[in-house]
Length: 237
Image (cartoon, rainbow, N blue to C red; front, side, top):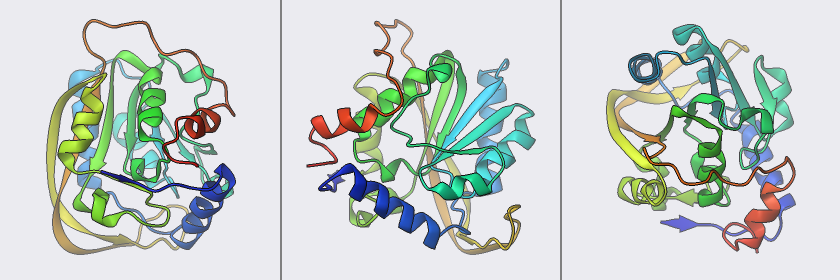
C-alpha cells in the first residue's frame, strides 16, 4: 500500500484537475462490467432508487447505469469540467452532502486511487449507503502500489484493499469480470467511440454494512472533509 503526500489541499485539487482535463475523453470501464454491477444490484437491492458514481470524469458510467437500472444515478467529479456533462456535479468525493446520508443504494468508483485519505473516503461513502446498499470498488493491477504517481496518489493490492474495507465493513464478495481492456476515446458527451487494446480481468470489491451496526459516523458538512483528511496526516502534510 502506498499513499502520496501533498503540501496542501490546493496542490491536490490542482493536480487532479489538470489530469482530469488531459484525460477528459477517456473511460476505463466496460459495458460488461457495468452490466455486472446492475445485475448484482437488481438481485441484492431490488428496491434500489438512487446511486452515486464517484470520480467519473465524463460521466460514462453514470449514463450507462441509469440506462441499465432505470433509477436516478449521479456522478461526482472534482474538476469544473463536471458541469459539461449531464447528471455530473463538481464535488470532492471525500465530502458528503447531508441529503445523501443513509439514502444511497449504489456507490461505484474506479477512481478511489485518487484519494488523499482512503480511510476517510471509504467512511464517507459508507455513511451514505442504505442498510442494504452496496459499494463497488473497481480494482486492477493499475490500482496497485506500482502505479502510484501524479493524480493516482493511492495504490493498494487487492488483498490490502479488501483488508482496509473489512476493518469496519463487510466485503460481501469480489466479482471477476473478464473483458477486453483499453482506452475509450470520446468525441462527444455521449462517449461512444471505443477502442479496446488488450484482455484483462477486473475485480469488483463489493462492500456493505455489517449486519449489526454500530453508531453511524458523525454527519459532516461540505467543506470539512479535506480538513479532517489533513489532520489525519494521510494525504496532506
